[in-house]
Structures are given as structure tokens and as C-alpha cells.
Length: 288
Image 1 (cartoon, rainbow, N blue to C red):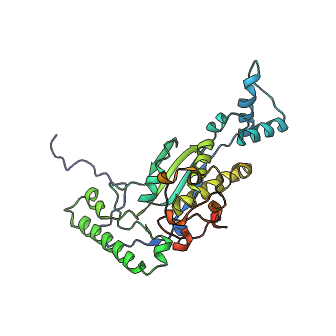
Image 2 (cartoon, rainbow, N blue to C red):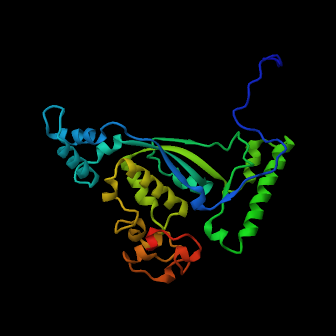
Image 3 (cartoon, rainbow, N blue to C red):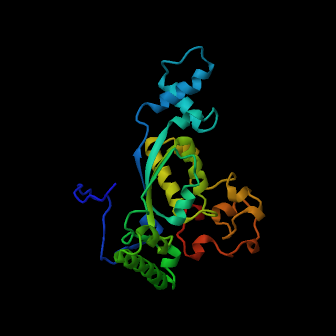
């Protein structure tokens, strides 16, 4: 088809920042990460789950249950005394903010999430996107050099985009993995519990992972307070770090207070002979 300048102009959906330098701000993990629940089961889901559990032994679908029957069946489901299948029907949707690209790769490994929608990096101007500075770096002698490096990358990105010679699709490759993103994600209760139990671990997960797991746990507990009776933010004997063979395990830091109670260890088998918080990261519940 020929060029036709008489066709109406259609505005771009994203903001354009031609001529500007980066105004991005650095944030530590605790400043960046925020978990907000934006959707959750709003019906009498306890009764719904109880009917699913108890109908297994009835000749026809259950219509009525006492509140005691409902509460007992729901508690037994959460504690693993009955099949967990009804939990798959309890869907939660979260807005998760403050993930660096490194953290995003961790997050997207959880393929059991039923829906994931992300802030794009393809056709959006990224020069003003905030970025992560890990607490350990923020409190170290490397802070200034780290910030200078990020600023150089941001401003080179802006310079290339401003030239209109380099596409924003290509210019983005100069940016560090520290840029912060937000994601919308939906997951059912069973998978959310699995996510929490995996990512709460301070031995093999990042601070951001720990904070997201804590945020999801706290948001769900507002709707299902019973979760606090069956899920703890502290690792236990089922922890992957405790049970994995040493030659196939992540071995960065020596075990913190929680993990040291669950396993014997030789400090010489770890990359650093220090606990994670001793290398500048914030303390967590695992260190208590």
C-alpha cells in the first residue's frame, strides 16, 4: 500500500522522553519490593472446599454443611490430612514490584502460575526506570563506583535513543540487570504455598526472593489466617538446602541460625566462611 499522510495520527501508548537524561533512582531490596494482592476468592471458599473434600464419599453432591464441618475439613486440607486438590481452585492475583532482571528470572521459573503479565522493556523508554542497589553494596566502599556505572549505562542508553539512530529495542542491551520491573501474577493457594516454602530460604535464595515470599504470605494470611498454622517463614527439616547433596547444592554462605540447627556443616565447604548478613545483607527471620 502507498504512503498516506492523510491517515489520522494514533498516539503512542507509552511516554516518550526525547532529549532527557536519566532521572532513575537507586533502591535497596527493602525499598523496592512491594507485594499487593489485587484479587482473591470472595465467595464462601471454605465451604466450597469442604464440599469438594467430603463429596468423595457421598452418593450425590453435598448441599449443606455445618460451620464446624466446614472449618474442620478446611483445616484438614491445609494440614495435608486430605487431598489438596480444592486449593487449586483458590486463585490469588498479586502485583509484585521491585524485581531486578536477575530476580525476574527466578520468579518466572515458577511455571505453575496461571497468568503472568509484565512491564515491557521492548517499546518503552527505559531511561527513568529505577534500579536496584543490593544492601550489601549500598553499605560498602563500592557504592559510589556502582552508582557511577549504572549512571553511565543509563545515560548512554538515553544518548543512543535521543539520536534516533539506535532503536530502543537495541539500546536497551546497554542497561544493567539491576533495572526494576513489576509483574502481575496469578497462582492458586497450593502453588503459592509451594512458592513461599521455596523462596523463603535465606541459604539459597536472594533477599528479593525472601521479601516476595514474605509479602505473598502476609497478603494471603489476610484472607486465610489459617495459613499461619501450617506455613512458617522459617525453614524446617524439609528445606532443600538441608536435604540436597552437598555437591549439588548452592554453597555460598555458611548456615544461618535456623539452618545450623537442622544440619551439621564444615565451614570450609562454603564459598564464604560467613553468614549472609555478615556480608552486608539484611538479617531475616532465619537469623533469629
